[in-house]
Length: 424
Image (tube, rainbow, N blue to C red; front, side, top):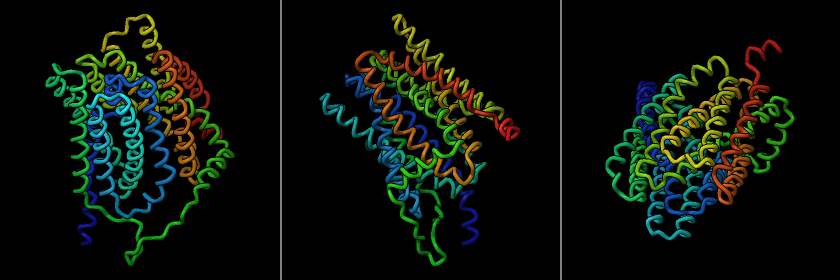
């Protein structure tokens, strides 16, 4: 038995790697930021609803993070829970698709709102469980390798499947084409859920006699007192000055996708081009930003913000000039935004580990996540309102201006680790 337990991590690594690739394909083909807005716009949902779906999804994630983090962390075994979340997301997509087939716009709008809220809720539950599971079963170096294999294999798989579905359905009406992509996504969610059941899970958090350990039950009010207390820390205030503008920059991907959906939802190759460009963005970003991050987190943050600002400025300018009808223009814009935002997300996480004292990382991370999600919900609703009352392009103009501001803030506030050590 002892020999079996020591071999479990090695046996589990290919299982988790394969499952992560299947999950990456599923999330790429059923992307709540790209694919579903295309479907929403093609079904003539109000632009406010299509834009606000981002904030609805984030609201679900925020509720999971606040109310369910402790119960999830207390679970000794996670694999069945993760399998259920994969199937759950697939079920949400399928139900939304079935309701969409009725053609009743108010009913479709309600179904999309509920589906996005449920996806956000389930997605965060899955993230919490998956992070804990990987920490127990995969070593740090193996996790990094697995992550790059996931992005590469999942990205290539999604590109190949998107092109295949496009060839099969290119003569079909828009709803039929979009539905086919989502059905393939649902299939891969189910396959991902089934594959993780092959994991040989090692239960954690138990006493020697096998009884589960009792954890201190955290009061709800402690979440808010911890956030307020973190603002007493100089490093935290400085980090938040840099972090909050990045919330707006991250919205570039869904809003770039939204303006593309507005222009190309009837096109036979519009959705395929967006899926291929976003998947390609993930493929390129991993090796590109890994090299730059090794030299300077500030360089990644500044470059990423300027990439979003430049791309958004070109996109908005061409839109106002009335010459943004080429699907390749929006595909390239989404590709650049995906590369930029992926790099920014990785660099800010690494920079957080550099500046946060070890004993304050957990509370600091929780506080940052809560503040940023609440901010993202409010801002995405506001930008959805702008897109509905005016044009999506004006929301992009706001993102461009904030991206330029974020680049300047990152350049001024993000101190390279070597300089920081010398200064101290």
